[in-house]
Amino acid sequence: MPRSLSICAVLAALALASAGSRAADLQTRTILVVNGGNEAIFALRLGHASTDPPVWGNDLLPFDRVIDVSEGRDVAVPVDPAACTADLQATYKDGHAIVVQSVDLCTADRVDFTH
Image (cartoon, rainbow, N blue to C red; front, side, top):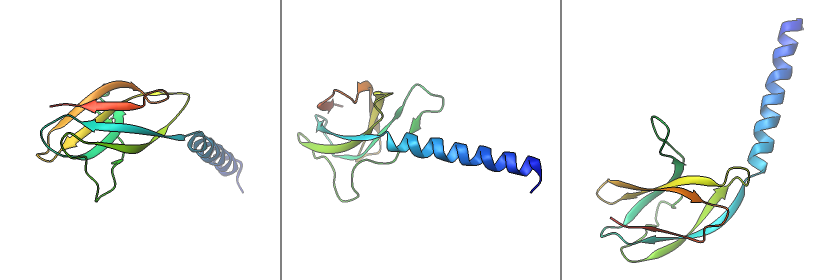
């Protein structure tokens, strides 16, 4: 194997090992998400609204579960103890979204959305 190819292989292995250990550091917490709006919440995402463009993760609500008006739902949220603060985005039935910024996922027990 040429030397440059073996160095690339080592670097790739280190990157994969680092990513794997980072994913293993995630913990799951249950947070009560309360819908104080006037429409059902159809999607809930973690991310960072301050980036340009904003970066949002996958939907945390199962496909067949929404958060109805004036109701709450316990939601399993992945948390990195080294980076507890994130934004939560709720997307309503009509497609508009509300963001609650700077939620401390390591300590929050409840997040309220209103619109």
